[in-house]
Image (cartoon, rainbow over all chains, first blue to last red; front, side, top):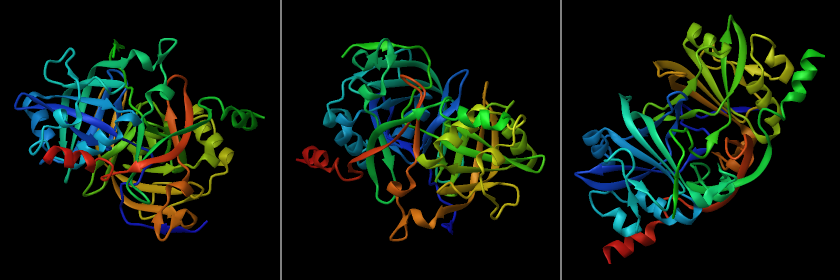
Length: 194
Length: 194
């Protein structure tokens, strides 16, 4: 299998398409972000890489709080819009007709139309180069009641988006279940001990 | 839209299903990891959240290098196996029949069968609680030639996996393209300025 060297590149799949929220000068604003990951289990934390010149970043620094909202495919236009336009130039909440609510933290705006909302308190900001990596402790998680099945989050109802940078910048939806995790690999455990 | 509070939870979609590699006591080992994200653009960096008691973590600390390998759906059994079994108990490379190669760094093992491979040098380790967040600078990216289309990575050929924790722990494949990014939202820009 021939391998091609591509130089140092941030090429992992999949990346999430999330809406990161912050109050900037006391007004809610949201940006699209794909450079997010889970950072810690207990206590629960996420990381978000953001360029410091971003308008949303200004709000995160002001309040040391932010939100991560998981949009469904129904919000694909709004999500993309929030990645194109700066909050310094437009009132994205108004344009997107987002219904904003606040939870435990009074400064982390949450989008009602997004099925999942995390409100976060900033613990660390690492200046890494072009981006700052923000580590946020998740203070509360909200889910739309309509996205639960038997009381549990149901990805088929959430309908989240994948941001895919290659071969072209695009959003993909989730495909079928390929296998159960912590299960399909058990066959190899037997082979190993056999 | 009624919202349910679920307590602080690491619930974002999608999460990647990656194989993180390290040499432990000079032998290559791999673990499945879903708590990864892009941390920085220039220079390119990723973050990986790992529990410090992991065998792979030991190798990362020994060499301050690691790899991130993107498995395709063809490697779903091997990927899951690498999340079930500890390298302290089994030679996962042998069980999975991984062909291991090394790139610029001599201590970050890469899996030839995985379409994409990133070799990384550790820049930071943040002890956050249950997990340590490892920030790695990507030194080189490799892609299998068969996964290129017109010289660019093609996600339809890579066939990466999504790890989905809810409603059940499972792997999903990528679904269809829902829209072009930095494009579908432009309609709202017009409405805004109109």
